[in-house]
Amino acid sequence: MFFLEASALLTLAVASVYGIEPHDHNQRRALVLAVALGDSGKEIVAAATGTSLKNWPKALTGQVGSKQLKLMNNTLVKKFVRKYAARRSALIVGKLVPAGIGAAIGGAGNRTIGKRTIINAREAFGAPPAMWPAEQGTLPAPHRS
Image 1 (cartoon, rainbow, N blue to C red):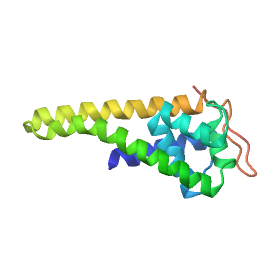
Image 2 (image 1 turned 30 degrees about the horizontal axis):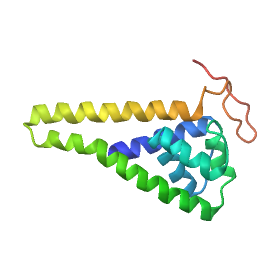
Image 3 (image 1 turned 90 degrees about the horizontal axis):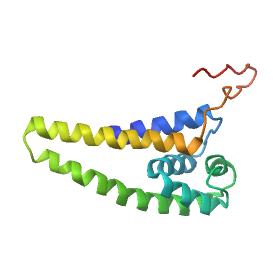
């Protein structure tokens, strides 16, 4: 569960840096699931919103009606459960072996899945913006590499 929470936090934090603020629960869910799924998630959102694979994160928060968003989320959840179950099933074997070896298997597997989530987030949002999104009444701070 911690891994899923961390993935959601990472995705929403990166989206915020890019000025994408999903205010609705279903928008946040779709964004997090699509990033976790990678290319297949992007394709589902792009098809549902009618946008290119490059602009799907912004389209998700502005161009999708609530009914369409619920249908898209159902598709994303089904795909995520299948993909996540397949990834985690290999890690379950780690619980059957002695503690030290099982911990190593679990740690390596979680690291691999976590790295993939970070890569998916970077690919989903593209290059970082040159400036932070402006808050009401504040000046944007420059992005430092």
